[in-house]
Image (cartoon, rainbow over all chains, first blue to last red):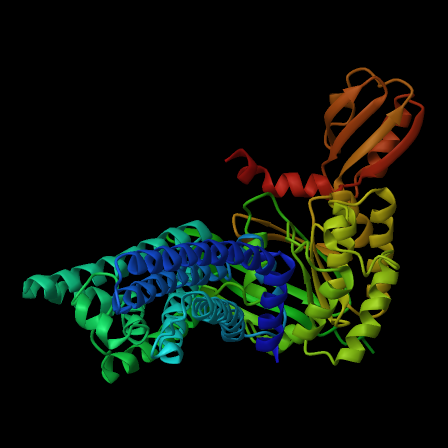
Length: 282
Length: 308
């Protein structure tokens, strides 16, 4: 019961602090910019194709998919930072202003606080990622007339990546101060992103040590690898074939073992957050 | 037939908390009886807050241990009957007064209808009736402190920890809190009061503990026993050669006009002092044992720590 009470308070806090409102307004601004760009791209490319008398719209269609994929890349970026910002003060911030001491002076166990906070920040982040991704895909279909082949799989993998960051952020928040946890998580995000780039460059150039370094880095913080997995499902086969290995998008299907690893990683991050908080003197 | 001693709601012995090589609490003993208003005093850094945190299970003792309401320290079930108001707590501005109490009532596991009834009652009792639906952003510091008190009393606890509960209150608010503490005492609730306002403690507490350097230096009545070895004397004019006159019965600590402070050679030497003064022709107006204030005791016991 306490878990739901604490999770409910986290959600109400997000709502009442106008975090949700700010997200909606700013995300709508992002969508508007994206759609305007998509509209311009679509109409100008069609005009050019017509002006040169091109019969096949293959190039235009590919460009539309690329536009949509870049839009989803930004969605993943925004959702990742949303997960970090939603969770970074969940424990550390409440300890710093002593409000958590007030909670734990009641018959509440520490694991219940972690579970409640995880539920609260996890729900906010996943709902945001899902809603923004769905909005972008639906509006892309309306404006560009394209849809990714595996939209549901792609969004679910993006959600899993968001949960990876959510779990790690809660762990950082349980271990240290808000600012330190925030800096650590931004660095972790950059670390994972760099791993993704190294892995792709290693594959592209056939430098095994680079590919291995990138792969191992991505295992330490698998959020970027999950984006690569998601992006595989968000591209048509023709686009993947044309692109080949690249640092931003995945062109090979994720293996089941990695997905299981990512799921276990999320659970382990939340459990580690609970253990760290259990040992902490307040 | 003697009265049975009241059960102990706090019973800790040899409590230690170390941060690295520094001991914030260093073998502290404490016994608090059910139904008393207990003052917990000490200079800044004496280990008071750390002690309260260990009692509430917020920090793990490095050594020693004890029981809270009959249960081992850290047992969450004991906290079902505990209220707590820390100093400098943040009240989320997005809550309403009622919403804040509903949240904390739910954390106690109280049924919803019970929380509603008690929250309204607590707001009325603390002078916040009619403000329950207002956002906490609009509350003054004093109102937030009253709300914190309402939160601490919501579960009708057997033991309440209050950390500087009157620091933000005006004189009327302080009087209200004193009355509240009297009501709690009458209802059998134990109050553990941490305050720097010694005059408030003297007026409200039955017993006090004074801690310094992480140890209990005094545990006893709020008004310490009068020091029978010192007396204040008022005479018209102090006789000449006072030291010689009182030799063997008292020594003179100070002498200003007709006001003397004497240290008696023995606790029962006061009549001898009076007789010698009268025999020497002095007009004796008063001879009273020196009453020690709580502040005197506090400063005496914490002098070394303050000097350090």
